[in-house]
Every structure is written in structure tokens, then in C-alpha cells.
Length: 331
Image 1 (spheres, rainbow, N blue to C red):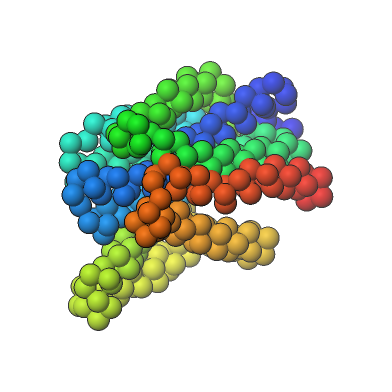
Image 2: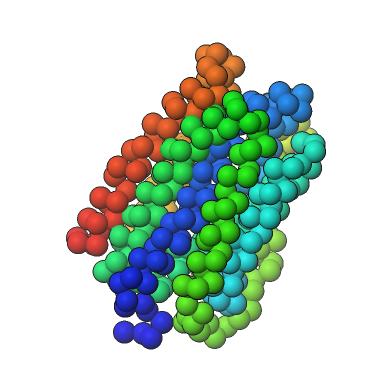
């Protein structure tokens, strides 16, 4: 067994607790923000389209940079990138809480999301690299459980905070948890890990995937306001498509690609990725639209809307740990 794999059960549990806490922090943050969007819209006198940029900024930043930060974790060390991401996330969370305008809040939200894009993929890497094979399923199942718990508690907690303290309070809840995760990570996460011989970074691929996703998101978000046939919308779709093709070509020939495409020849990996995409595709749309639907159309207050949005996450909490245990036993 490699010397970087942790065999001490107590330290294994600490590793699982740290990465699960990180997952909980960003999931509760995301779900609290979504339930608060109607309140933020009313506070700043902004339209739904303007406020919708807050969750869109999160999705755009994370999806555009997560591959790059995963690669940096291989090169610079998981511990450095994981803790650095937590530091950026915590400072960004505090600054979002004191943002004086919606545009300032959007800019600080982007900064905060860079931190989440750093520690999110590294948490999974820490579980799969430092933990023995017979506990990885347990670790990943527990991470999914805490993610479900965050999505479950976030709407309820966000509704309570909005009702009693205003939307600013949703950003201050995570700060103590983030500081706790940073301190624990400094002490527990190993600095040693498998060495990567090739330390080059595919910056061309990183730029192309960012161009592909950013123009795609802008085009999709502009259809309702500008129309599908508007030149700006069509141009963004064209740029996105061309960037995606160029990205695939770049990754096939790059010496050190940020996305290793031959991985998809593994059908287990390919179908797991497709199923995860389908689930997140549906779930993210639900938790974005339902706060507006429940608050504006159904006339629910934020607190009761949060309780309704707890239901899908409860299913994750119940079944994720069972799935992890079953995978450890049966593969």
C-alpha cells in the first residue's frame, strides 16, 4: 500500500468529516441564496432576469474552472488548493453579506464561487487518493448525504433568516463553518500525495471551455429578452459551438489535457457522468424556479417555500449512505 494512503481509522474519519463539511458549506450556501432570490429582487428593486445572474454566475464559474483547479490540485498539491479555495470562499461569503448593490453582490459572488470551484473537485480527489478502497464508497456516500443535508436545510434556514434578519444574514452563517474547515484541513489533510511528472497546464483548453460555457449561458439567458433569432443570441450560440469543437480538438492533442477524453471509453465512468448530468440538470432548474413560483404564484412566504424545497434533498439524505455501503460491498 502506498505510504500516502491513510490507514488510521480515526484519521480516516477526520478526512471524511472535513471534505463532507466543505460539501455541506457550498450546498447550504447555494440553496439559501436560491430561496432568497425573491427577497433580494425586492430589496434592490431588480427584475427576476437581473437577480437570476447570481445563481448563473455560480454555475458558470464552477463549470468553467473546475477542470483547471482539479489539474492544479494534481500539480500543486490537494491540500494547498483545497485550503486556498476555502479561504477565498469564506472571505467572499463575508464580502457578499455586506455588498451595497446588486452589481457589487454579483461581482463578489463570482469571487466566492472561484473558491468553491477550487475545493469542490479536490474534496473528491482527497477521498479517492488518501483513503483505502474499502472505505471510499462510505466516504463518497457520506459526502452525498451532507450535500443532501445542505440542500435540505438551506431553504428552511434561508427562509428563517430572510424572515427575521434579512437576506444579508444568509452569507454570515457559513463563515464559522468555513473557518473550522480551514483549521481542521491544516492539521489533518496530508501534504504528501502521488507525484505528477508532467506539470504543464493546458491553458488553451481552459480558455476554450470557458468561452464555450459563458457564451452558451449568455445565449440561453438572453432568449426571453431578445428572442431566439436576435443576432447577439445566434452569435453566442455560434461561438459556443465553435469553441466546443476546438476544445475537443485541443484536448485530443494536448500533452497534458485538463479533460482526458479517453476516460469516456470506460462505460462505467461515461454512464455515471451522464446520469449525474441528468440529475443535476433537473434539480438545479427546480431549485432555481420554485422559490419564485411558490412565493409569487402560490403566495407562500419564504419560510414555507423553504420547507417545500426540503423534500428532494431528504431523499438524498436517506438513500446516499445506503448507496455508498452497497458500492463498497458489491462494487
